[in-house]
Length: 228
Image 1 (tube, rainbow, N blue to C red):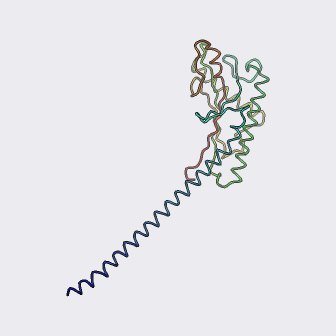
Image 2 (cartoon, rainbow, N blue to C red; image 1 turned 90 degrees about the vertical axis):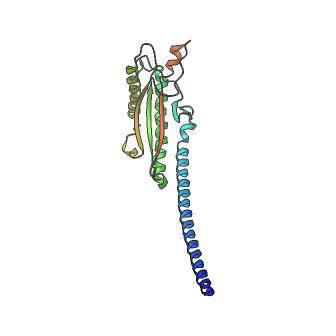
C-alpha cells in the first residue's frame, strides 16, 4: 500500500513542477518581449528627438542674426530693434535706425525660411519624421515706460509682431503657405510687459534699460506625436 502511494506522488509532483516551469517560461518570454518593445520604442523616440535637435542647429550657429537662450528654449534677434514710443510700423519715422534694422529683419526672415525649408525637406525624405511638426511663435514685446498703459502696450506688442509677420510675407516669406501645411503651426503673440527674461529695471537709467525690451522673440517648438 505504501509503495502505491509513493508511485502516485512522484509522477504528480513531476507534472506540477513541469507545469510551473512552463508557466514561468511563458511569463518570462512575455515580460522580455514587452520590455524589449518599450526599449526599442524609447530608442526610436530618442533618435527622433536627436534628429529634431540636429535640424534646428543652423539657427543656433547663426549668432549674427539669432541669440539662443537655452534657459528659455527660444531665439532672440541678436540685434536691437527699437521703435519710437507707442510705434509699431516698419517705416523710417517709427523704426529707429530704419535702413540697418529693416535689412537685418529681412535677413532673419530669409534665414528662418531656409531652416524651415530644410525641416520640410527632411520630413518628407525621412519616414521617421512624418509625425513631427513645429509650433512657430513670433512674439513682440514692449517697454514698460511711464507714458504707456498696460492694455495699450500689450496691443502694441502684438501689433509689432503682426508687422514683422506682414513684412516677411511682403518679402515672400510666408510660413502659412501651402507647402508648410502640416509642418508649421504659426502663432503671432504680444507679450506686452510680461514674459520671462526681460531686461531688469535700472533705477539710474530707467528709459535706456526698458527700451531694450522692445524686441522680438522667435520660438520653434517641436511637436512630436506621443504615439511615436
